[in-house]
Figure 1 (cartoon, helix red, strand yellow):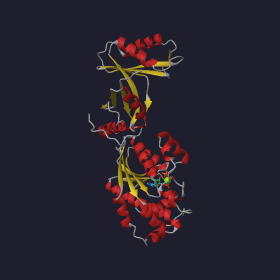
Figure 2: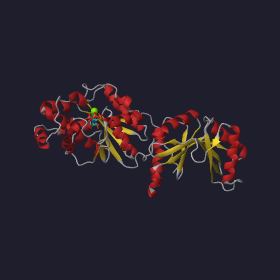
Figure 3: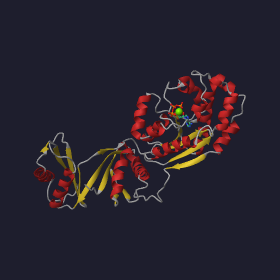
Figure 4: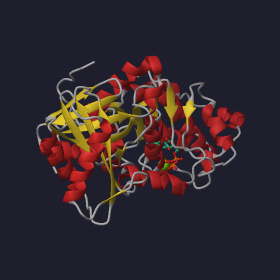
Length: 400
Ligand code: ATP
Ligand code: MG
């Protein structure tokens, strides 16, 4: 079955009254980003739905695979278009219904008739089309309450539009419609999931990653770039800032007592993240912490880490179990990347017995003997920036 277009229905954003056109514009851009390499795709937004066209049919099929990941879409349907003559409508209805297995299945026809000049009214159309379909597929029977196949037929002045499939969308809100935050992205399983969940609430993200070459490898960095690129497939480009962290980590190992070094590492990471956040005009910092998972994720540790800033720290996984997080990671395709066996800077420098209940007063006392500020400034200045996804479309046309 070759479909002519995709009909995209909006989700939660329809509730947003006056902001609606802003949300729709944002969703259109995000879909374009997710489909950036599909050259023939054209998107036409309307007030309460969007249409996607593609001259190259491979692009259409690829779009069907990717749209379920774009936030702000409630559902979408591939649609067959034909002339508004009964012969054409019958033929197309049979093609559409026949694209699924029909033997022993139930079905129902639903009509939406916005072209009021069309010579048949809704219930006549329903009966006529239903009768044709039943004649062609004797294995089908009618079920008006809970049909296996729901054939939707829309009669508009520009043509008749038919579909029998409704694919669920990612729901949520278009990325970017709720501001921007900076995601602390390690190569682990949790932080990409944390980024994903905030994107689902409409938050655009920049990402920051700390690397400590030569203790961490190029492959560890590549893993993080791949994770950031994966996140960009959910409907918004991601700028990744990679921070050279070796000097600071070595200084911590030399100057801070073992039990406190993990907390200080996190506090300095947070200070650097906060400086990058200001430069990138992000409003919050996102981390993948989950309460009690490891020593640095007790309430005492989080308190000591938080003390370096008043910026909101968003921790969407704080109450999640590891297994729940892994399930999401698998579903969104980050798990396979995260389990590549390259260690990140924290794993390598982790002391054997980090304190699970660090005292802020002790930590600040240990830190007071070393001037970390110039190193922090230097690390921020010497960061490397990667823009994901790696290829960009030349220009976006706006229909709104
Ligand atoms: P993850 O699976 O996200 O690595 P984790 O369970 O391994 O999390 P930690 O290693 O303690 O937990 O890290 C806690 C959080 O700190 C991470 O989720 C991430 O947000 C941030 N983080 C840790 N290491 C780095 C790093 N090298 N670069 C950027 N952020 C980091
Ligand atoms: Mg980790």
